[in-house]
Image (cartoon, rainbow, N blue to C red; front, side, top):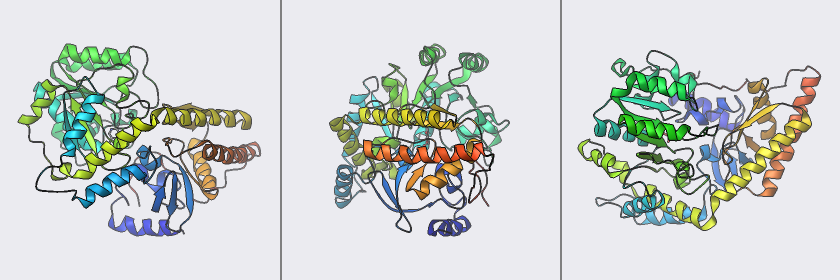
Length: 433
Ligand SMILES: Cc1ncc(COP(=O)(O)O)c(C=O)c1O
């Protein structure tokens, strides 16, 4: 058993579920063998507890580190902030600078609030929307975090199975929230219209990810924007995963969508905790009548890291690089699949590409992670591109991937089960033993 797995065993006894984020569970990648913990990381390289070095093609910190791990310029700004005290009785002046910067990027917005994580930014947006409209229901599409308002969807159903994550239970969620959060299907206007007709007099907010694994059909986002206006609901775009990757700011700018609010996090600060809720004055100002307040939302690192990250995005024209890398990776996957005859389907926006094996996805992707790990790569079938990649690194990854696909094909041809050293990886949320 590797050192990381030994530590995980201990962690599971004293930390329920072993860690704080579902997406970082070792069981989702390679049960019993995943290195699980890291000592340090730089660029796109990461060192485990035994000092083994890997290239990270497994998401780069759940797609946060788009400049690369331990970015010199962001770290310099953060170090300065720490040395000047990251917490004070007075406020960090940088929050005003960051508010101005975000409003400058998103010209439709007038005001900003800050938090530190994506889920809490979503909750804040929903609270403000309910305060502004005096209505109750939320229509949504996509993943929006762990909070009660969202998980209440599953009180009487498994509707969240149709969104990003299946297997989520509404355990611990007050039954009184039943029927307050109602999902609709992405790119399915009929599904959306049905829900609007049923609840239209009491819809406070329509919250959605503008894009996840598939691109929006022509007119889909525009129709939702128009409907929100018509029924007096606050239209909230969740840019926590999509923001800052294809363009500076939310991807809704690229699609020329004008929401009433948007939430940003993740890539905005290259992995330091920071999130923002931006919106029009008439909606955002309602936040003043609702108690929304937290000590740690005022600490300096959140603002400074985002300012330094955005400054560097501008200097490097970074988003073009992220798209180029993603396109190169997608093209490589497609060529490998064709030449080895192992069928896959490819999806995702270019900076967050993903593929699925058409047959036995879980077994094959577990084997892939197992073999790529031996070759010095952390892999996942969904990844986030980073400025720290270059052609050599991507080619090395694709060359190794090609060899593993060939092995998969050979086993398949001979009708031999893939030789997994541990269990098949998990796909859905479940309790861990
Ligand atoms: C679209 C979207 N919304 C909300 C969240 C929740 O963010 P966090 O994990 O920071 O609470 C995520 C996280 O992946 C996300 O992708």
